[in-house]
Length: 441
Ligand SMILES: [Zn+2]
Image 1 (cartoon, rainbow, N blue to C red):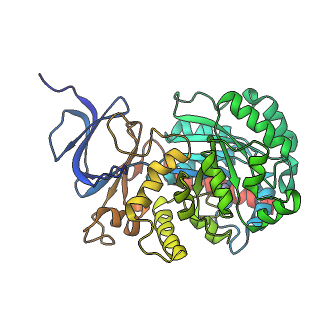
Image 2 (spheres, helix red, strand yellow):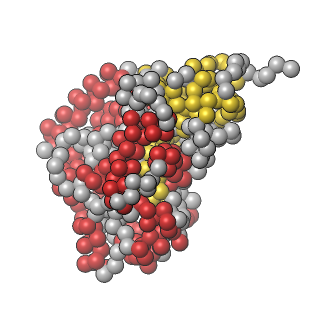
């Protein structure tokens, strides 16, 4: 009996499944958005589309467990050599002048950049501004996303208190433009900004809403010494202790940053199964501290890798983040054997998927959604390829990604984002960004 035709076959590539298995030459087949088979060796398959991945690695798509696309694209490269609160202040001046068209082009540019660097799924944290322009962009460029509605009512964010409380009081109305895109592809989350910008009543209200609606929570937690000092002055506690004491900690949380944790904080995060999104480049650039990765992993906390926004990382590039993470933690622990290349790849894929509450993603496995990234390993900067995982973590770069596939749908095809005009997107985005800067600063 002839085999049933599949939608997509990826042949000749080396599959790096990111589930602990060794890389192996295999053919990956996809039907109805799901990986249906991974067969060792090369073979001919009856497929509607076949991609020849000879000389390339076939990976699960990268998962970015904490970022800000639209807002941070507009601040990229605008304010360098400064610290977190100085750029929060500048960001705030821009945000007051955001308009839908500017946010739309910023989102398009961010999605193109992610698709070109092999990111298939991202965890967006909004800081109380319009979500709908990004939803419009996601209708054109089909990445997966969880869109965290941003809330804040204090500090530099005091001006958004009314908007935030109104959105919490009627979340259905606030999120009506973003629900139900392609069923499960785009999900919603609740994103309190940070402990220094949200009041205790707001944290309590968000906890109730999250429990009631079964929505994940995505917040900046324990990011830097200034936050630690604020929490000590205001509450006499660490951020994590305080969140525990008000009953906020739970397994539905993605806590971004976590650079300032005590051993007791790490135990609390593990006890409540709070997930952590690790942003090593942003943390180093803003001198927010180095997260104790070994401490968290030893405590049993799930940790994913994240770029954070392009304001503080400048690129949406997981390759840079992987290399930097490995190097930083070897240096911080004084142990060159800590954080192997396989572990770094796992943190950028499976770890991040779990950290953003999408555990079905992040590996190349039969039955899993076909979110895949193909990376060309023929470049001079990785030759000779003795060890594919080493090439991917330490040598490869975003430009080496040739295909990005989300749910079986090819989003990046031979280095071109399907269905959009990249040059026009960059031109329109730059035009709108410069106009925004000129009327804000
Ligand atoms: Zn952030």
